[in-house]
Length: 413
Image (tube, rainbow, N blue to C red):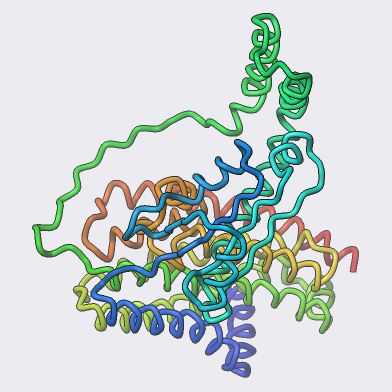
């Protein structure tokens, strides 16, 4: 235990010599939160809306499905779409009347079905920053999903496409049966990974009385906290590379102190930094939005436990990277999708249903849901206990694996 405390003390001293990094980790979420609060306070609690113009020059079924995937043209929605001609869309984007213009080119449907190169053109409004980026991230997710769909069901899709190209879009019963059996076999092969056993948890939750529901601005607070946690976890995980380049890890391997104690000390120091940061962000947020301060201790502890799990996750990624640059690229490449889907930019309440469902399955989205329930007095003790135990088990597993991988990294250095 003494070795762990000494390692933690060493890291805390080093963090204290670089206060700018801590200010950046906290500053970005606080600035985003301040901007959101300013927007919300001036819009009568109406959430910002993405206005997406779509110029569909293909007219195929895939293009229609892509259009519908973004939402509907209903007013007051989180995302509003509108079909326009290309030139009209360019003109309106130039006047700043929409968030972005999406051009679906001719031949898009055939290219997707035949897995041929194709390009979706996205023209964004330069006066907006976050909203166009959210549209771009959605398109990237759709492109990744199309790629993996072809990896799983490529032969079946090609069979349907070839039948349509032959001039007869209707499949025979034998062909339908053959394709259905093939798809069923694929689903059965991957269902254990995609469809885990469902666990039904019944809990009693006291609903807040009418008129006591949190306003839209308060719904952003948990997302801001999780955003700060992700930035801190990513920054703290890179400290392993600093110690490796300085020779600290190699020298520690030659001392009686185990590398496991060094890693645990780093986690202890990181937990203290995360706890202090959580207390600051949550205290400011709860005072600003008028939330009861009695919920601060439990919210800070849960956020710290979540931040520690994220730190272990990012450390795992760093230990599997060949260089510091590779580790930084890997971690940064997953941060934006996590923030986008996990409710840090927009609360789940204003997202499309499919996006909110997907976001709650992300690590930060899952942690955010529990933090939100704690802050708004909706979390039951049983549900929080089960979640905490699961998070601790996940963290212990990553810690044991991290100690083993750390020895390998030091040996290869």
